[in-house]
Length: 251
Image (cartoon, rainbow, N blue to C red; front, side):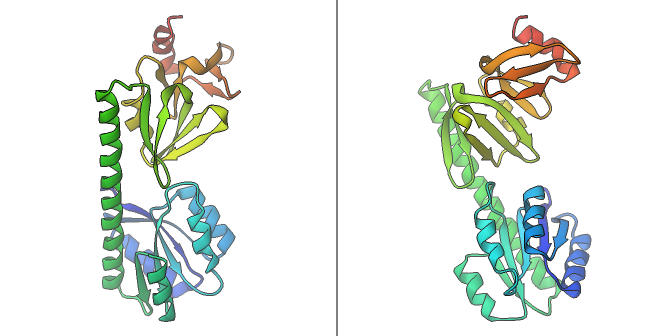
């Protein structure tokens, strides 16, 4: 497993420096991509990096972060509470966070908590992967090849491939843009879906995009190839894919 992406929310310099130092010493398991103290800026940071783990130096000032994290439109990160107030340990238990770390912090306790998070993430990923694969295999056996299973935020959705307009890479996630302005954010990367989508109708026009050719309105050759889709979005076709694409759609 790659190092988990983590963010620290704290307004205490000592906590911030210790966690940064821990991350620097454990690059094989954790990638600390940012720290923040302000609640609103913290959510901007979380939405930008989509971390798997968030350390919250919990206090009255930032308790609202938990509710905001639970409302995210992508897979919710695991949370570890940090505090010198032991009463937050009870709250941590009730909120089902990964762990509670009592100050003063030490590396060993942080390491144990991070491994708890890694274990939980691996177990959930494995479970979701198995469920999605089972559904797709069952669909194939019953010749329902027009459908595919997509693991979204809190459920597995069975979607009709005809309704997919295009798919967009969002780091390690994939965003599906469907008709009727529906969107689904999946925890799998675009490369994995490229092998599942119907090869007769889906083409990867760019590193970041796979399109459904049945949803194309027109193709422009002005200033490089672009295609306009039924939802009005115009996407670029990478130069190195243009020749293969024209053959694919039999131009």
